[in-house]
Image 1 (cartoon, rainbow over the protein chains, first blue to last red):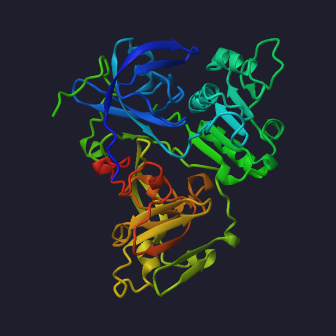
Image 2 (image 1 turned 60 degrees about the vertical axis):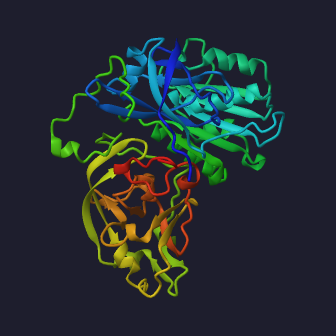
Image 3 (image 1 turned 180 degrees about the horizontal axis):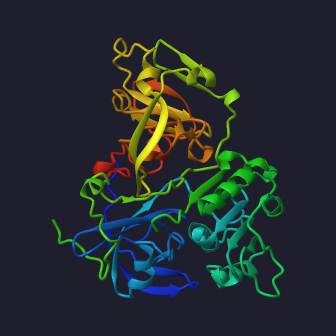
Length: 249
Length: 209
């Protein structure tokens, strides 16, 4: 019998404004994080009258980091995300349990080029668990050929933009491809539309290279990516999906 | 019990004043009017010409229905509440399909009492395990209509299992049959950290809960 995952109190040590709508919460996790890249935690909020609300958030920090990072996008009529982005202050505590999920996970193994090429496709704040993988890959010194196709509404809404630029500038085996679906800078030369089959055919590894694909984002985004990758010849069992519904938030 | 932690300044949504409705939401869940989607991989799309439903395993009988034969089985329409482990619950969902009792009627389970578990298997390789006692006696169905319309592939069409008293991952999408077994065997989510049984009223989300 597995041991129960206990609720734990974490302290907020830093809050980082990532984009106009998204903030990262850096948390002190008393037991020390021992998660796998791609896993999530449950967050529980309790009001004074005992009312509780729970939601799941992907872990954005890599395994082995001292602190745990959750990146939260504010959902306008949400119940939990506005509290996390607007109400929470450094020094406040937050109840979490996890890490959870043993399927949507990636392991850098021993570093180097050990492992199949990685194709990551993120929609909006769906970048969080994929960022944990990218950071894990960097911290392990892995050179597994990796491509991230990342769809955002605008340049300002690209979460972790500077860090992604920096990581890919120093690592020719990591390529970041952005697409901006609503607004673009005047000098923008990259993709400017929603992800479609042609974009995936241009950017994803050929199926013959036996790649591993992870996609995370809103339901319609994930459906599009997973369906087209399968049609392009990716083995369905090697396309792993995780959905971020705007529901409830 | 330790003193309850309070999240400073958290008020939450306005509480539902309809007590009868509130009592239908299990602990840690919230009500949604939408129908969110959760699955581990791409949506399989099996044409109904190639669809069939089979029952086999450690039983003497083997059963199989083609799509048209399956449609010819007695159908039931029911309104149930569903609860997903990702925290949403949806009340009063309307489904049409075949009772698992009807499907198992051709198997003499009384004569084979050691057979106590069912492994549902699906297109896409997904499996989930259930005690037979949880799918008999009007508690589970294989459904092919939602809200009076054919079930959308993203929600598990052409047909999915419906076991509303357990977390919704047990209601396997794209179901193609049952393997009946004597020994319980964890299915897909049950092998990667989720609870083996999944009672939402006991909040059995993860292994160990």
